Image 1 (cartoon, one colour):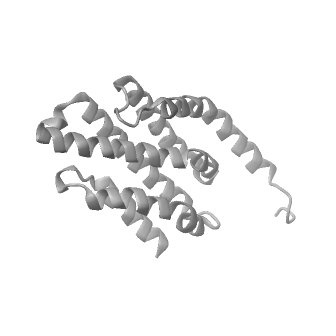
Image 2: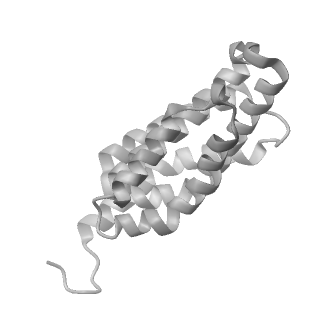
Length: 178
């Protein structure tokens, strides 16, 4: 074991490898998030790019385990923003267009982003729950935002546009925090 206060060089090296892998994607991610107008959905091209980045993050999260915590910390607030804006668009489109909204490419793209965000968050919770202080990190850092954004959205959305992945996310939270 390492002496207290001395960083493990393998962990440091692994964290740096994750950072180097994710940095180019993070640049693209934040550029897309930054240019987003709150009144319009993401363009189809940007939505596809975001979906790819979310899916890569989910794969890296699963593969890297606890080393992914720093990456999620870097993107968490924008992940919550992305979930919120996608949900907001879906809700407004559903109110305006009814069931026909679900056939619109923008709606489908927003829904895919929303669902993949929920899957990424669920993967992250599963990944860090067994890490030293993981449960406390979930409880203090991530759970408040999940409740304020995801649970609030689920609670206020019409049943027809609620996603089962939100239930899976909170079931994972409950299982982790018990």
